Image 1 (cartoon, rainbow, N blue to C red):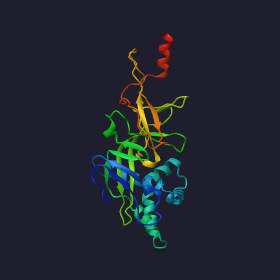
Image 2 (cartoon, rainbow, N blue to C red):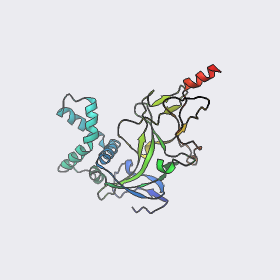
Image 3 (tube, rainbow, N blue to C red):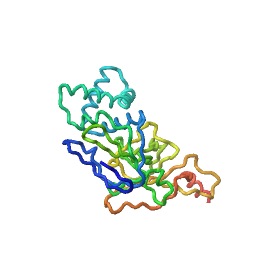
Image 4 (cartoon, one colour):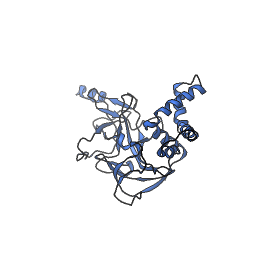
Length: 284
């Protein structure tokens, strides 16, 4: 598929059967296209992320865990997770390549396990599902904020981040698999350390604390838009709280015609804590 410079609608389609929804994307890219290169770490992390988000590979994830348990009978949960992060994608590739002697796999699956091309293309703007997403570099000085994302968590804790790159990744092989992914930096969502949840349900995150694990990729279809709004500085006080927090507003599209966000201030202001505000009120 040829992607021209400037605004362009994209719709991934394939001439091979059974390609999973993971590889079907519809949207509109705009802005100047640039080329990038996946280093070894990003290549492994991205391929592992893609496999773990593909239902076809759920049985292989269980098989990998069984393999690791046989190899290391007393393996801890932490060690198992580290092994999956670093070795699962390569293990799947070798397992399926060897199994082709006895079993016929779908063509897309054979292409997929070989991993993505190291070169990729990226754009600063992507329109999809009623959202307009920007990279942080493109949108940080604009009146409206479109670079924040919220991803529902599996442990009841949502994850909040900032889009650093909007990437189109392609795979080797005749099927021509492609995928749109966001590369993000994530806030630490440890409650009372990097995140605070008010009784009203409002969420604050600290821009000074980042998610410890390097896991930057997310599919555009798996996230909603969020904006991070600075609390106003209290000029009546000589000091502010040690940690600056940003209030999170998640924007979920119900009507695709409604995706404009209110202007927000750049997220650089310090945060005044509830305790300080209460103390100030009590002293007046």
